[in-house]
Length: 295
Image: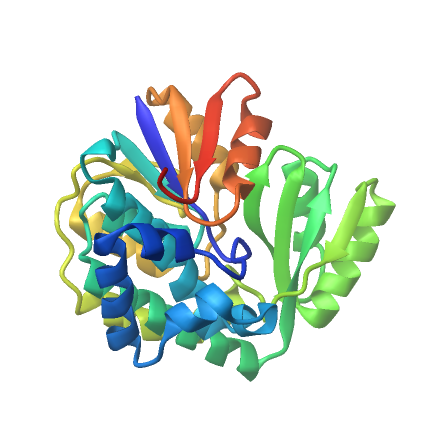
């Protein structure tokens, strides 16, 4: 079975999507539509901006979403997913690609999500850290022992877990995790504590926007971040999408469940190839490739 996966924040690069814009009239039309919806020329920043331009949350999230979704649209009849999933932001790309959300509604939600997360980051300084070489259970146990907000945020692959929380909580956790035998516990250059309770103001803001948006029955199941389980039920999809901002991304579990559900090969659509690498770390024998443009 063909599985398609969609990347999240961090996969962006200057020049992303330009090939598609130049080669495909469909892509050009959709990119220009996105410029109109967003109220600024995001294509200028994507194609010829700076790394700093692309690091702005209001730009990063829509840019990655657009690259992924427009590539899926351009593939047309060659895009026949039997299951989809996306990493954090990528879940929105997956939901447009499988028909649960329209392109326009997906972009508006992603833009609102980015703004809400930015605001939440400004309310309380917070951060994230990557922990390498420790069992998930050990990381969870150490986080739970700290008297600060610090939680497991991204279960990326076996031996790689990202934690999220207050500045003090993350600093304490990094020290304790290193003492416990982690190969590395490294603070990340991110705007805030994504997928933690500190994103609650953003979750409330996004909840209202998601509740007001029409979701349809998709053409294939989506494996969602919150529980790593497949669903095609629009109401369940909405509920899980609302929970996503403050809950961990269960990517390791998602990939395992997709393989158990019959996935025989994975294609990562959009910028970068991070997910392809993570899939290989979950199951070395699995066929996985990344795709950023059309031939």
